[in-house]
Every structure is written in C-alpha cells, then in structure tokens.
Amino acid sequence: MVRAGCCSGAGYSSAIGMVDSRSTWHFGMKAHIGVDADSGRVHTVVATSAEVSDVTQADRLLHGEESDALGRARERLEQAKVEHPFQVIKQRFGHRKIRYRGLAKNTAQLYTLFGLANLVLARRRLLETCA
Image (cartoon, rainbow, N blue to C red; front, side):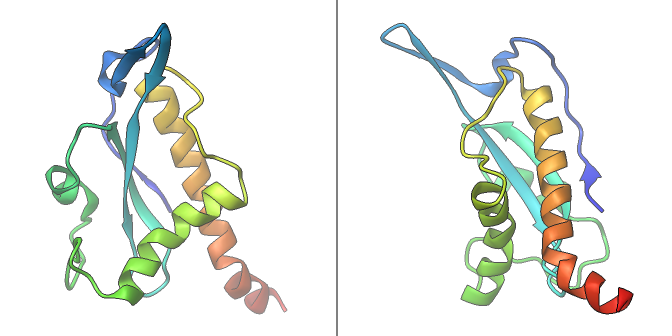
C-alpha cells in the first residue's frame, strides 16, 4: 500500500519549479520512492521540486522496518527493483510528463499511478492465490 507523504500547496504552486523559456513555461518535479526489497512494490512516494536533492529525502522514504537502506551505490538487482515501478508508470500508463501546474495535484496523480503499478507488479502473485 502506498503511504502518503506530506505535501502542501495548490493551484500555481511555485514549489514545483517553474522556468520561463522564450514565453513557454516548463515545470519540473521529482518522484522519490521507497521500494520493498522482497516484493519490489512501492511503499512510500514523496514528490518534490526538481531542484531538491535525492539525499535530502532519504529519511522520508524509510518506514522503520528496514534491515538495510540502499542509496545510489546499490547493486544492479536493487537498482532494477527501484526503477521497475517507474518503467511501469511510463510504459503501461503513459505518464511521461507532469499534467498539472501544482505540486499537490501532481503528487496525488503519482500516488494513484504508483498504487496501480503495485497492482501490476503483484498481479502474478494475486492470480496464483485466486487459482
């Protein structure tokens, strides 16, 4: 189950990082996720402005029951488990760009997408239990 992080702001939030480039506004944000090492499912989603470093969000991604926490210097198998939910929401659900100007609305959409990605990733196990 995806656990909601703390988010604030609505409408035209400057927290999302707006950049004006030749009269075209570009918005940037990052999705930081905490993934279970055994199942590969997302347990925490934190959305921030694109300028926020990954290291500053590490404590928000932990839920307290971890035996170890892996950062950027992780092995390929663990990196694949972290990147796989992103691949699911990009390939299966077509989420490649943010849709809204506010951080709160985009965060809500990410909660939904990662929740659905968890169902896709758990599909095989769920079908085996039903059969």
